[in-house]
Length: 458
Figure 1: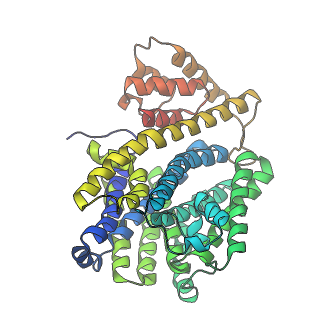
Figure 2 (figure 1 turned 180 degrees about the vertical axis):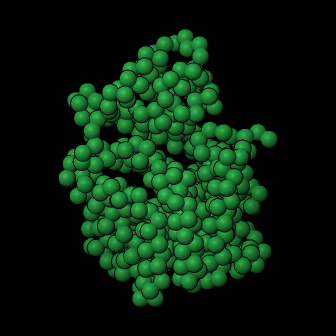
C-alpha cells in the first residue's frame, strides 16, 4: 500500500475523512434529502466531522506553539495559514452571490457592513452574533477562541494543565447549558460585538509585537476574551460551546500524554469526561452520537498512528481546509452529487496549491526574517515568556554546523549529517527534505521546526 510517512500522517488521514464527511452532509441534504434524512436522524455526520477537526486542532495547535516557543511566530503562522484562503473564499462567495448562485446566511444584509467584515475577517463572527458569509465558518470562531486561550496559558506557563482545563470546561458546560441556552451576545448587540472584535484583534497584535509584561498581559487578556466569547457568544448555547472548547483541550491532553508530560490515565479521563458531558448537554440524540463517534475515530487514529496511511487519504487531509471552506459554494452550481465531489476535489487541490501554499511560505519567510533580525540584535521577538533566553552554546554549535552543511552543495551523506546536527528522524527524510532542513538550521531555526517545515514544503 502506498503510504505517506511525512508530517503527522494519521492526523492528515483524520482530516481527510472529516472534510469530505462535512461536505457529504451538506451536499446530500441538497441533492438527496429524503435519503439523507434517514441517516441524519441517527447520527449527525456533519457534527461528527467538525468534532474530529476540533480534536485534531487540540492535538496539533499547542504542539505547534510550543515547538516554536514564540507567540509572534505562532500568530504569524496562523494568520498566513488561514487568512489567504479565507479571503479568496469570501471574494468568491460574494461573486457567486451577485450572480445569484450562492445564498449567504439569513439576516446578514441587516447588519452594518463594517461589522460583518470585521467579524468574518477576524473569524469570530459566530461568537459575536454576526452571520457568517459562508455558513461553515462557524467552526473557525471556536478555533480562534481556542488559539486565544492556548496563547494565554502559554504566556503564563500554564499550558501543561490541558487535562484539568478540559475537565473543568466540560463539567461547567452542564449547568451553564441549562442557565444559558442561547447567546448573550446576539444579533442586537452591534456595539458590543464591534468592541469585542476590535479588542481581540488588538490583543493579538500586541501579543505578536510586544515583549515582556506587556506581551504577557495581552496574551492573558486574549485568553480571557476567548473564554468569555465561548460562554457569552455561542449561538448553540454556553453548554455546547464549552463542550467544543473542552474537546480541543482534551485533544491537547492526548498529545501531552504521547509526549510523556502527562500520565495517559489523565488524558483518557479528560476525553471521557468531555464525552459524557457532551452527551448530557446535547439537544438531539444525533448530536450526542456524533460527539461519541468523533472521540472513537480519533482514538482509533491515535492507536494506528505508527501505521502507514494511503497517500491519497493523507493528501485529502492536506487540502482539507480548502475542501471544507469551499464546498458550500458549489451546492447551487453543480447538477448532482457525483459532479459535486469531482469539482470539489479539483477546486480543493487548485486552491491549496495556488492560495494556501504561497500563504504558508510567506508566513514562514516572515518568521525566518523575524528570527534572523532577533538573532542579529541578540534577543528574541515575541518569545515564550519572561526569562526565556537565547540559544545556549550547544544550540549555537548545532546551528553553526547546520549552516556549514546547508551551504555545502555536495552533501554525500545527508542522513549522517542530519543526525549530527540533531534533526530527529532524518533517516526517514528524502535528500531534498534534509537539505532544506539543514539550510533552515543554518539560518537559525531550531532543528525540529526546520525538519517539520522542510517536510511540509516538499
